[in-house]
Every structure is written in structure tokens, then in C-alpha cells.
Image 1 (cartoon, one colour):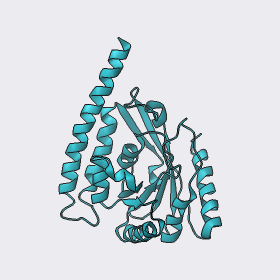
Image 2: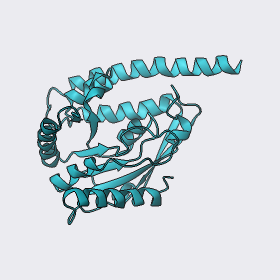
Image 3: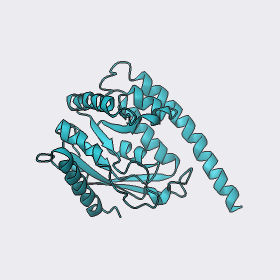
Length: 243
């Protein structure tokens, strides 16, 4: 009986999540038409998608330290990654316009990937680093112009055990090149609710976004600067409560 109930819960979540993503995708794309470059009319529907995805799984969201956010300033948001629930939580909790830094292959994901491409989220092409850098340079210039905050998961993928994995330092070059501060965000609780192997939240619970103080990037240059900045952010993550 327990296995049957678990199957029904997963099936219900997947079914409702599909239709919720479809609805918010269609409306979000329509709202891109008046302002495609800034996506200022479409972004509220991305936030609505995030909040709705959490609600479908019975997951609450609490933001600790929201006063350190400045939606009127472009910052590079850096978060740990333990669950599929992290993007909905971060989108739902950040008050300004954020843009995910995504691997090119994720564009094939239905709805989420399609919307990310249409709305101008930042794409990393690992197969062509030189062209990828040119694309990201243009994207970061647009981020500064429209006060967009790129969001990166420097671990590169979801954690296998809920603990902080080693950082890929290349992502921090984006902040250094663009001259924007880095803001660490600890996502607490998402791994326990929906770990890597789960197809749906295992139980109702609460995700906490613990926001750290922005870190200025002045003085960080080249490869040594990337590594030093990555280590400083890693220390900040641990101080915010990430294991």
C-alpha cells in the first residue's frame, strides 16, 4: 500500500507539473513579445512558475536576509545545487530579474529549456569555448544594461549527497569580466525533500534561501583571481549553512 501511495503521489506531481509548466510557458512567451530584450513583462510569469512548482509539491519557501538583495543592480548570484527544486526556489525568492547560466544541451528540455533560450538566459557552449565566450560577453553586457543578475551553480551539476561539491572556477570569470559583484545564496532543505534520484518531492517541507552579503570583485584577476574568488564564495557558502 505504501508503494502504491508513493507512485500515486509521484504521478500526480508529474501530471500537474507538466500542465503548470505548459501554461506558464505559453503565457510567458506571449509576454516576451512587447519587450523581448529585457523580458520585464515575462519575468513575473517565470517567478510564478517557480512558486507554483513548489506549491504543487507541498514545499514552502523562506528567504533569510532578503535585505541584502538589490534587484536594481546586476549581480552574479551563486548557489549550491542539490535538487531539481533549486531553480524554482531561486526564481520564486529573488525579487529582481535573474538569468540562468545554462549548458547548451539543456536547451532541449521541454518548456524550461525553450523558454530559457527565448528569454535570453545565458548559454554555455562547451564544444566551442571561443564562440561561447563571445556570446557570454555580449550577454553580460546586456545584463549590466538591463540590471539582470546571472545565476550560476558552480558545482556544475546536482550534488550526489547533499554536500557542497568542488567548484568549477570558470564561472567566476563572468563576474570578473563584467565587473559585477558576486552574491552567495545557500539553498537549504531542497536535497532532503527531493534528492537527485527522486522524480518528485518525497514529502512536504520548507526550502530556505539564506542570502549572503555581496562580494566585490575588485582585485581579482586572471586564473589566480578566479580561484581566489571561488574559494571566498565557497567559504561564504559554508558560513551560510551548506555542508
